[in-house]
Length: 423
Image (cartoon, rainbow, N blue to C red; front, side):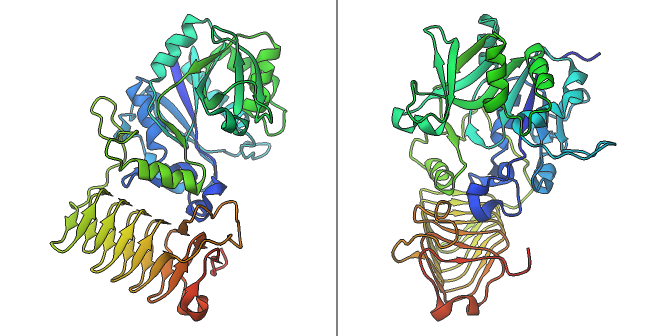
């Protein structure tokens, strides 16, 4: 029997509905980040940099692009005969076919995969955070405390604590209590959704709670372990960690990459971030182009101005176009004399010429005010925007749009144009 000391289970099934049109056709972990990466590259790279060579990736929502991206794991050196990376979608059983209903239920459904490696420890990760972390250091901490469960936590400002699962510990890191999004938090140690379980503890709690609907780690498994008198410890992490779950935080995390001394450094030699590198031509910046403080990926062609922006692979910025404070994902074309201000434009979008995006006053979005906000204009993948239109802030556009969709040539602030082709 194969024996692995620690294997990782990476939860990558989430739709990420708070990313609005960006995740309409693609799972959140597969959304582009930092020009050439996808969000899932970060936890996968952390695994390989931490010496973990067996990773199960649990997919569910719109998994196609994620599966193609991961493939057999070559970029992360995870193409192993024993172990390596395995994509684990929900599958049909002879009696019934079951979707994953909660984070722990997804892990439970893959019990056979874990048993194959007979691990001593199982690391549970989520596929939608941007951070660098050495899981081996966390494992050493787990062993030193003879813990059954170790939860990675990070101190957050007290006023933000009610947004998280909060851990209350004694002086030695042992967890005495926890509260899920408490109104009046008693501590500011927030769970990062990263857990190391001793295999015995994980197996016992998953089997005991297998019939719990929507079985979840924070809501069900951790309380079960605590009630059974298991040792739960909080591992404090003080590095950079960003949950890119909202359009605002996703935009911010991308913008932080272009700071003079980025808080999150993609260029460190000793902790590389790996990704599937398509073979594409080098970037081209014309003699008339202006580029200031931006990340420009391979294959991009810049003929206009780009300031303070993250530009994906194979993007074309045509002459006279100006892009500021924006994220433009791969394969998108920005037409001549078009201006783009504080926008997130997804993959393979075509923007016509003489368009103005991100103009005028902010207004509340008519469709989903809690998602389309922060003054951002958001365009979903494969969208087409006709020439000569004006698009306001807090807007969302998907699908192939025509001039008729813009009364008076304008989509005012807070407006939305949704998919027309029946999707």
